[in-house]
Amino acid sequence: MLVVASDAHRAHVSLEIHNGIMSESHESPERADGIAAALAVAGHEMVVPEAVDLDLVRSVHTTEYVDFLSTAWERWSERETGPAAMSFMWPARGFGDARPDDLIGQLGYHSFAADTTIVPGTWEAITAAAAIATTAADRLLDTRATTYGLCRPPGHHASTDQFGGYCYLNNAGIAAQRLLDRGAQRVAIIDVDYHHGNGTQSIFYDRSDVVFVSIHADPREEFPWFAGHADEVGVGPGEGWNLNVPLPRGADRARWFDALDTAAGYLDRSEVDAIVVSLGVDAYVGDPLGTFELTTDDFTVVAQRIAALDRPTVVIQEGGYAGEALGVNVAAFLAGC
Ligand code: SP5
Ligand code: ZN
Image (cartoon, rainbow, N blue to C red):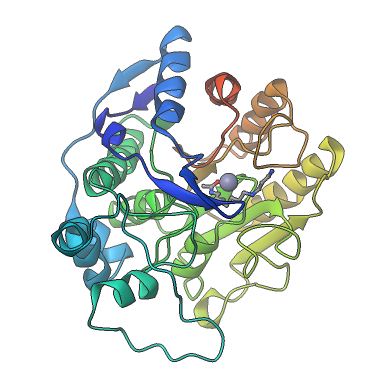
């Protein structure tokens, strides 16, 4: 399978507040390097992406947000000495939604979680990841064969104008928009990451041309806490085009595969002409951030179930934090495509 990847992610070494301590992010450069190494061993063809299409990025995210991301580190470093730009306050319930003029306030306005910071290499990495998603979509349309975009950082928590959950630009959303721009009538995004893809859901919540389907840990018990409930079905023209299948923490393999049947059946009825897979492998039994129990071999079966839907498919990397097993699990998935 064609794998689109880049080394540009390496300069993005972010921090997160974890258990009350500012630490190196779980979302590390070793993740993408480990996946690339495993896919090379498996014999996949690797290519670098074309240059990023910022007009495409701005059709998924607001111009104000893209401009903010492109300048945030420079603005931070001119006035602060801290190693990572982040806010310490967000517009929680009861506050207004006016955008502050000051950088610190804007960092709060444009983010939603204390697990994600902006560091010197962030802009280079996130534009490379967006370019990877775009090129993976383009190569799919050129060849009709499934492609894989090794995006890092991931994207599914990023909304039109907010970063968080280790995500800044919504790579899967960008891939879906590219497929639409090149002629698809309706695209499905199926998100199998352990966490709900709140950003992807919100970007397409009022649209019927992108169907969003997600299997994830119930937000009553897990990050991102405030989105991913089963009663979130879309609004306006998007009503009925969003399906969440939340599972309790610790749900076993049988329950997870039942959820996949539900998601796949819904997708098959949705008359989509292409599929984007948001491939988080943090539903793995050994993942430090997850509580689900999928095995390495299960990821092959997941891919086979999605491949049976028989639509042109692009696979975009999301989460997965299980060290050496991460690359093995991604390779297992691609083996089933
Ligand atoms: C793309 C993706 O998978 N993002 C996930 C972001 C989760 N960030 C918050 C992590 C909180 C970890 N607390 C769990 C500790 C388990 N011992
Ligand atoms: Zn995740």
